Image (cartoon, rainbow, N blue to C red):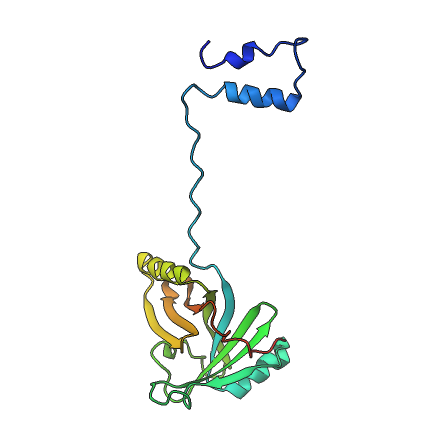
Length: 204
């Protein structure tokens, strides 16, 4: 029968003996209809929007109290503390922030100086609380990943509420996913070939 000639030639006791694996391979090939095409390999999956998790960002009204809390309760004693007020006095809503690595995860503490920005104001800790989770952060290094993230946020109708940059080394944005997840998302593009913005952050 057309399409199965190879089976007619597999006769016990004649010619070289085939292994069981070879026989199964020939059988599988014989069962493919003549002219059939192999299915194309599936396309590579797009980068998930929540790929590249690397940090948790907490808001506080008292940086000293927040660092003491994380030191005493959670064993995170070493922070790099920075501020935007002195470096960029022209920018509204200055903040003080502190960064610490814990293994592969970074903890970020953020203290607004003066009135908090519209992005931070709804997430400030309640009276009597020291800190409150504001966002989870996701990191990438390639321009294509950054462009894909912007497109994915637009496609999923997750609004971008703030964008910023640290010179030519880094770009970031906040997206408001409170409706879906209960918190904001931060996406950070640390550009390939540029100095590592987080090089000075201590490991705990």
